[in-house]
Length: 229
Image (cartoon, rainbow, N blue to C red; front, side, top):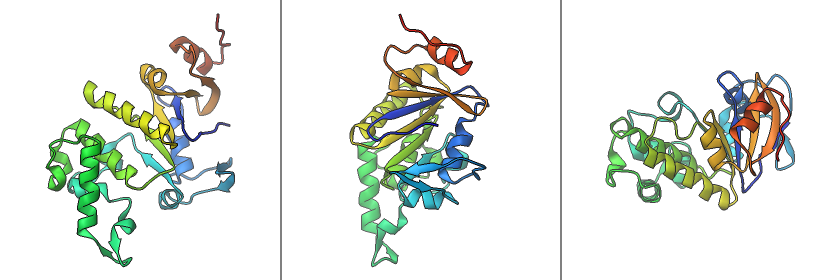
């Protein structure tokens, strides 16, 4: 068992095949959960589909942004509001173009998406780093309480990676619960407050990120005792 806390970045590390993404998919309602319980704010939940999870404030930024995260042949504006269309409506029925434009421009500025006038650009025409920022904008616009980010900095340059890590820290500092899945130990150690270690579909340990090393995490994955001097 493990918990994800508000105001923290909880890292989840595991090698390929450890079951990290499968675990997140089950919690998010994207895969059927065979057993176990999920509690959100003390209330037991079991989401039948991602739409239910999103309505309850749980959002999932996928590892594969092109296949599962973005509509690459649609515009930045359309992608940014894709997960929050109801809040972009007037009278509950009609999309408010002014509200959509304002929302998109705010996230372009806040996340430093380039070029600055990209609101009507197709997402496929942006760099990998800027595509990833658009994916962040899409989920942040949905106002999540808990944000699952799966390999959030994969396939982006160093500058974009640094900014993404900064965004995650800001989100946690504002009280959001961030669950970060990563196979990169430097990323896990550099960003997480606590680390959930997965191996072969099981949680092998939860470690506080205080004096934690890569060796500590790998020993935990393979059930070896962790010792600090």
